[in-house]
Length: 428
Image 1 (cartoon, one colour):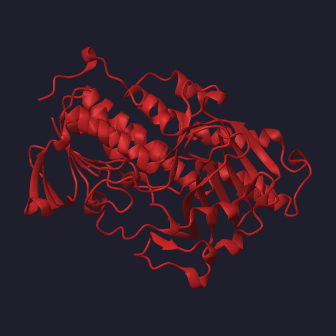
Image 2: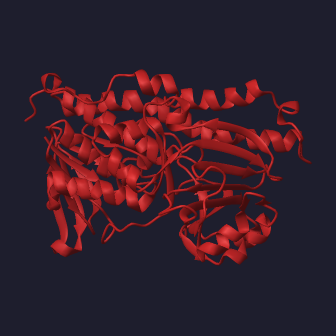
């Protein structure tokens, strides 16, 4: 079986490794960037996806370059605790939650793809221009590839669009869709080396109905008292003067251009403006997603990750769901002699879950607790449970986890997506 993957990001590379694990090795990954470099900021990978990476044999290596997140805490703008919950193994999962720099995760995946499948598997500076589905359900893929003389052509039995929120494959399937919708919020992101706060493995989200700060460590200290690499993200509604040009979604800006709106987020245990200034640079993005699709799969062509279900960055589900997509797709392809039938099963398993998460994230996902606290106690509180009951706070978190299939019971007890040799079909 010949598989062409458009996109060499987290989802595309995980898919290549997952296909290899079930015995599919005729794989080509085409990546539009001229080279895959360790770019980006932090990611949180939830235990349901860490399980998949562990079953691919990557947990030890990823744990060495990331942090096992121990707890998640929500605070109001005064630094008062709204809700705290253990995460990963501390919450009873068999696998941890990982906080990690996106570039480090991508390079671990890339190195493993090259080691297991060969250096020629990933082709950089190559972008899908067009494709045709033939009568026999194979795919002819036209790729712009300057290094190979301008244009390349590939034949595949399956093509997967894992090429992100501005997916060329998705645009070919839905040519009238247009740009990703924007909710009017801006997000500033960056990183800085600083000494750990709280217990050293805590992820915090603090703010009110208008403003949010997300901070967490994504490396371990070299020794006691040594700094770690911190991820930070700040969000607020865009003012008229700083509405971005729609084509300019990744701009470098000076921290002082936006920090006045977050100046009061200084707590005994974390000074958010000082952390941002320590990093020296920031990038600004509009908070965009994609509308849920009525279908992902057209014969031997399907979508994966952000190309299929880009969602607002709440609940740590972007990269997480891409990783799970990849494992489920490989699982389905290993169990079906007909690739088209496999893609149908993949979509049936994954599209309802991710559609629900897209819609929940538009309603703030688990960060709803911050908005509730701000609305019910705008001047702060002494005891949050006089404002919101512990049961209501727990149910917001639990309901979100159940909707995405990453509650403790589901993650720990469901069957593996590993496919034993005896269960695999004989593939052409």
